[in-house]
Length: 162
Image 1 (cartoon, helix red, strand yellow):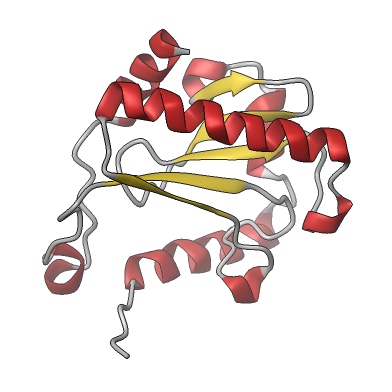
Image 2 (cartoon, helix red, strand yellow):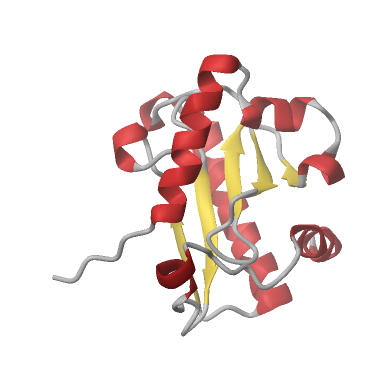
């Protein structure tokens, strides 16, 4: 079995861990509470959950679906939250297909620090558009992940489609 290492993610996770000692503020909670959707790159607000663009995207269009309640575990989500989260994931897949026509998607959650969660105290679900050939040599040779489109431009396109 081959192994693919992603050191750029470790740096993000470590930087967040270091920040945690300075501030106990949850960046996902403050994102929706600020009511600055364009500045915070909130894409959609539901009754139980919201969608926000990932500030450290794996690919262009990487969004996160987040319950409003500050919960760490999947089992604490209510039936209403689970249903809305799944419907928002579906809505975002449709919107991202419209604006960027990816070849596929990764959808999932990293629950807990050991599972790779950079923000482990507030559960969230990733929707990552994927294209054939969207990986290249840049992360390996220069420790850099190339994102081909500006976050604000993608945000504007998503808002227009939604």
